[in-house]
Length: 125
Image (cartoon, rainbow, N blue to C red; front, side):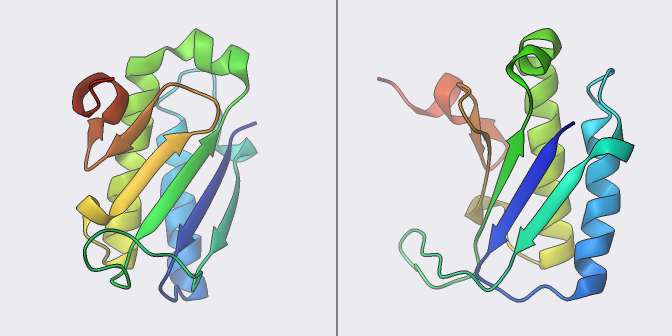
């Protein structure tokens, strides 16, 4: 049973949240054994969030929670596709630029920023 938490610093009306939820149900089904019917989603809009050089401009974070076994079985490539799709959905329905949206899985080595896996491509630790 996947869970998605979307947090923004802007207001999202009920209709936009519902439309995002419907699209997110389809997105989690990129992982073959996940079912959108079992998706739980919550939306935390108008949160006090700051990001980057223009901290108060619209921004969002999207957290996908999967069981560790589900993550391991799906693999990073499929999960990265889901995260990219979630970013696209939030950008489409909120109007927030993709370069101000973080998508990630808690407790996993994959965070994306602007459609790129940060761990594998941006960060050189």
